[in-house]
Length: 205
Image 1 (cartoon, rainbow, N blue to C red):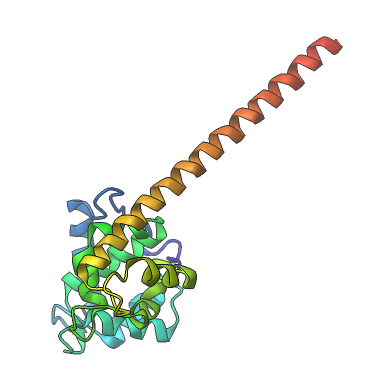
Image 2 (cartoon, rainbow, N blue to C red; image 1 turned 180 degrees about the vertical axis):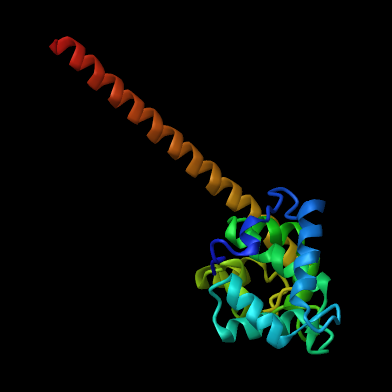
């Protein structure tokens, strides 16, 4: 999933630690929500929701429908600003590669969103259904239930899900650290090559 460059969401900033919007950004988002709410119901129905997501992302129609059903937990056929705000933060988290951090910081509401049936447990089908929102790969799903299904019932309760988010954010931080060290090493080697070539040039003259 990618945000469309130049869309309204493109200009919002998500805090990298807490994965929330600033007060200023929230105010702008409220105004944007009211602009989308052409029926003045303080909510968006499925048609308005589809056109919004179709405009700001590259999600397919079936994916947009899945997202709407996930957010419409009251089954009223519409979503409020609170649900809209959650969605925007999820989209910005993925765009900023903060999926793991977002799930860790907001594990309780994310668990609630995934738990469509209210069973207080998540099966593989739940993650498979929504994995495009958090960039979860199929291999990660297999490892998830192999490593964190402590009860062995092929489902994750909230505590098991929380453990998964802690592990995921730690793994993401280690990956980012390794990538940063690799980038610094590459830059250092490049500088050494440039210095060597400059030295050879001076000796040649």
